[in-house]
Length: 514
Image (cartoon, rainbow, N blue to C red):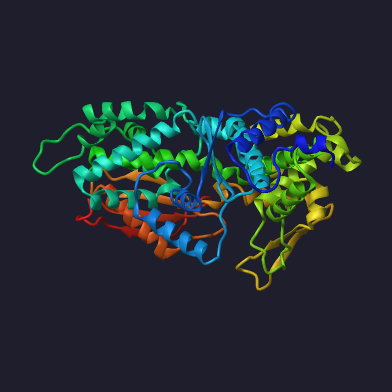
């Protein structure tokens, strides 16, 4: 390597300082924004220790969070595994906020710092800012302020009502967190910065919906009052309701205002993470593709050495490795591998299409502008729709995909589709369904409330593929619902097409809890 080329290097060897990080960031930005056309939030890069990374693991990666015993338990578990060498730590954690916060480990070499800045500060950052799910469901501008408000609010509740009471509320809310999201767009976009002001306003008056509902319930010895019409009652309760935390926050008759606010806090945080559950393959695929393009370009322009590029390739290969189905290390489909493979395949279709590609992807085959296509894909799809639209026969053959069906009514496993002409579309549909949260998450909805009788809450689980809930787990979670509701709760597992009831669970509240 010549002296001029040496002088062009961003760093020499594994060591780095903050000046090096700044040079790396500027070089990555020039390629990511200037050449790839990425559109990102301003970056805030923070260097943290291994212990701080473990702490971030425990609090689901957020920069500030309220206290809960489960976070301490998770920290102890991860720390023990890390100290014993049973697990490694992520090179980075990135937060969907404005500015976008990227935590990078101080133990990383200069090469790895370059990689994680390209991956997180530009790949993930672009995806967070531009994907439609994050635009609809999250508020990157307000999340940091909201977390500060939530932490302070829960601390004040602990001081006023006691740690035990607050912890019980959080336990119940966390148990229902996966059923505390709206799955379809609402009329109002998230505005988390206004939540603290709205919380103060809610303290000044009782919720009108709650009053309208419960003032009509007959009481002993009281004169009969006009009853709400069935249509009006269901409209006020917003039935059927898929968001259990939202329903309980608005309608549970025995909860105090501070308890409703805690349910709201947990619900807002669950909604913030909802898009990430639907875009794991795309998000990691976008970030991995971007870091690969950026690191390759840095090497081509002489800004990182051959040794640094080989170090990067070793890490990149480890991340994108997909073990075969009969490999002892197989643990399912690696989202990094599938996402990166599909992004590269789209690039191939755009630049070097085959006749098969032109038949399957007439809109993009041979258009010559892979980055424009990828930016459009990153903005307008989620995992399920992305795979069902862009998984190509070429990639299906390359990965040797097949569809294995385990039907409980059959004594043998059945290979329903393989990588051939008859199987391509079936394989694509089957794989995309695995990434559809509506298919994988139990569909549990509030169906009705017996206002005039024993105030029993009726839930339905709409069963798919005859897959029932685990009885013990369902009973424990239902107990949390009953404690929050304050009266008996019934969960019926129902066959959607016929209405047949497979099984029924009942829980009664523990009067001492709330």
